[in-house]
Image 1 (spheres, rainbow over the protein chains, first blue to last red):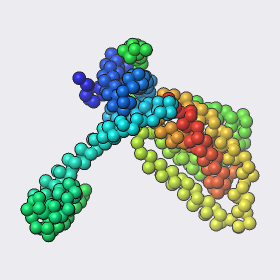
Image 2 (image 1 turned 45 degrees about the horizontal axis):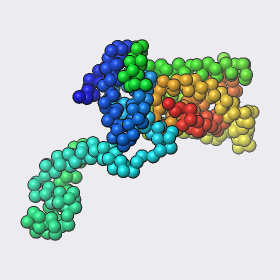
Image 3 (image 1 turned 90 degrees about the horizontal axis):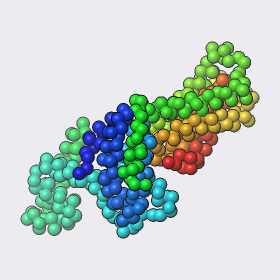
Image 4 (image 1 turned 45 degrees about the vertical axis):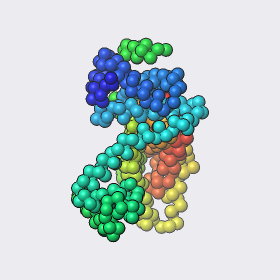
Length: 179
Length: 213
């Protein structure tokens, strides 16, 4: 069971005030998170994983004055973890295993991608269903106009007009929210 | 070492951290190094004998405003880059403001002066040693900042080295004003800035080596 950001942050703040027990809970709480972070990226070199976890814990302890309580804790921890990993690659002259690269990229990009996806579908919900379907088919699923027309039992020119009107409506909607 | 034992040994002695501990650490390093630089100005170069009189004139404050505003911006940037999640530095373009301001004063000064004297204004009496002195005076401050960085966590080492060098150079130039009797804006704009830039460049070169942790 991993501790939440809020819980870890509370321990961190109390540790900064000199509470040794809270500081210990923080370092223990970070342990599974860091192990997972490195395991995912070091593809099975268990010794290196544990070395990096320890180095990161030492850095979190020794350099904790660089944590700004106004900011999220885990972003700070991961920035340190990432630096330690790059530093170890640089030291050993090793590069990232190419087989693992896709996993890393997927993991790194996952949050942004899913945020973007939910943004798009939230926006598409605000325009008429026919226009949204036409845009989804041609612009997101990558179908041709003819294929989209067949899928939704519409005329080809109807698809084109729907996409055009739908995009125009979306643009207006985005402009409104930016105002 | 077992990771659980490591955590136990790390948390044996947990000292409370004061608020703004990072800022304090940086300022302590600056004061430490700045003390060394001030001593060097006093002993090695000597304060200008007319310092009190000069402080009543505009040229002295123009120089100080220029170097101190650069130093302040550079210090803030260094504080940012001392954090692992430092964030964007786009606002550093604000440093173009003092440079542009001093350039405008230079042009205004030159417009009032016959062009036969421009060369003398530009080179002053000390152009050969000014940049070098600023650069050398930056070394103690850079050393003080290196001490500060031992508890900081920069992740962009070259950028952090560059801003640390810039900080050291700009503060060194500020203290060098206590010695240097030059008064023309174009002199300061050229030779002071050159010394500061050299310090920043050196910092950028040394950063990846000296700031690793």
